[in-house]
Image (cartoon, rainbow, N blue to C red; front, side, top):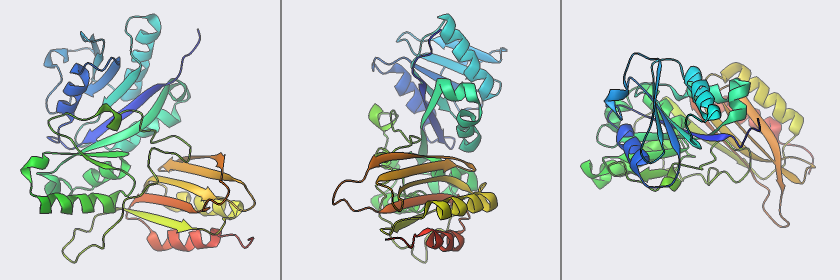
Length: 330
């Protein structure tokens, strides 16, 4: 059997009441012409279709528009393999997958599933992590580190219930989200309605320099004395000086050895000494990859940019280590 292109996977996270199920309903009912499979677990606040909840570990139902709804009472890996079996047998058809995490779920194990298991890595491609943020209850939710982590992992942040807060509260929330995650664009979603381009093909885990605006980092305002200090924060490092590739490897190995479990997401586009091509790298916790990308253009500013998003981010250690990576070769 010839294996086709990997199936893009979108992970949907966010606290209970943020609107994940409303968004999924919109996604499944919209006439977009896509065959989307949705994996929903039994812990969600309101099932897409409560009749799906049965005694079997995995329930699969094909909807009228060709989408597939899958409710799981077992671990994610088993559900992913079961969907592949049914796809390969012709029992169901889908070309995209959306996974809804529970409100209290840590996105890390879900993301790692697509890197650790070799067969799943070949058949599925993790495209992006989308996190919904409830504007009306964000302050309460963000007292919990897991909510901050969901924001830190995100490639897109969708703010729901914008109409329930005033401009000052929304702006304060946007600034707080930016301090946690400098990479993820913030979008407002109204009752589950949003352009599908904001959800699909975000290429959040692609190893290339064009990461859908991922390195177009949002400006950060200084935190006021009254501002919230969150455990999850982001750090951006920039330099126009070339980097020593051996020292870079030492720096990253040491950083991951000591703080790998704290580093939720990290991504960089790097200018390596004596190398005409960009180096791109990114990772989730201790899992990371790197590759060479296109050559720097003539006259283009060769700037290295790295963003780290971490739990209790060791900023001083990262800055000190990065300063040693700068090459003495000009």
